[in-house]
Image (cartoon, rainbow, N blue to C red; front, side, top):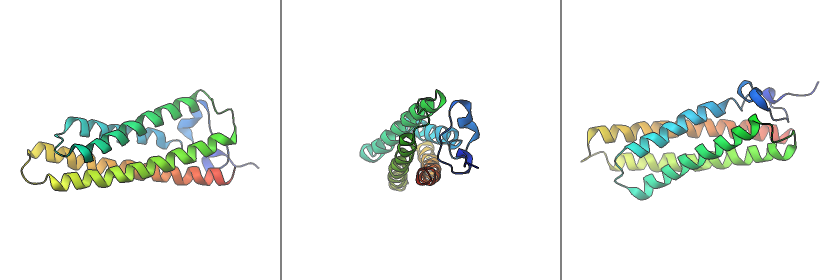
Length: 153
């Protein structure tokens, strides 16, 4: 019996099966948490443009990259080729590292702006920090299971 994508097998789903297999089901949560980071950084006061600019770049890059990858999975562009399994593993590993760096920098920016800023902006940055760590965790879990799928392919 061949392993399936939901149990860490070597095939990628296509069509709406993307929404029923793990780790590909995490695409939805990556959209939600990544989008929240993007919105919160865009709407908050940016006293440290270098730090928060990186967070914005990472959130937009990963949001667009995840959108493109999900769309390609939905239309079945991978055609069942194993090179796409490698692409999936590499993308999610890089996204996890980028989001980890962004989460740490956003937490640092939040700590540095604790005193002397409007209470609302401080809380927006706290929320952005929390959601960026949640997005990091999602990308790490997706990367780990994508690497397991890649190893078995």
